[in-house]
Length: 277
Image (cartoon, rainbow, N blue to C red; front, side, top):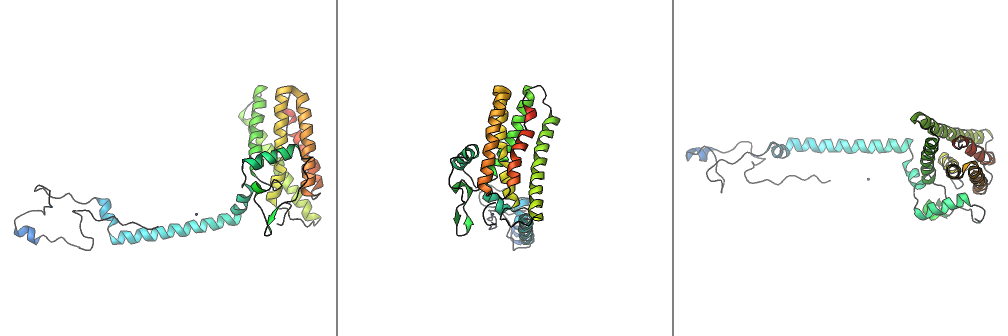
């Protein structure tokens, strides 16, 4: 990157005929003295009152209530522990920043990726030393467009293979795994090169994934034009997108990873040329 690097437990209300939870034994002496075998509640027409359900009896048991409270406490502690460990290995908070986009941002960003030549201000906006969310700054990197572009690229590749009677699940899976493998190798290569030459940069791994994922936008355009207009349309659109992504990378990263910016057009061609016949 080019900038410095979510109760109250309710106790059921006692219902008529339900035993008092604090009374361990029923007082049957008065009923027996009158010769009745069971207590009759008002309106029961002389029939014994139905016993309370097992669930109500369970909920009104103090021991059960204590066990439920203890179980809820354990569950809350477990959830807190899981959240802490997930945030340790997966920067959920940081990822939320890269997906903070809206429709307006996506439209502007796509236009910037295809037509970067007229854009003048490439500086990232900050608010109290913190970069603003992507939806407020078209220059900020995001992961929404790269993720959606990668999925769309796989779908378009399946469409291209299908129109050529070459589609198979295995071949489509190979296409997806190859694209993902190349992206991983790109990120590792950049991190290794930056480490070896001891370049002081504020780019993070997530930033690299975002910038390297923008090339899928041009790849989609090239394959679609190839399906509609043949190889001529493919080469014209892909060539334009290759130059555009090169200019975008250079102006955005300020020559921080010039070699990788130059490699983007080559990978765009390598991952798409076999999809157009």
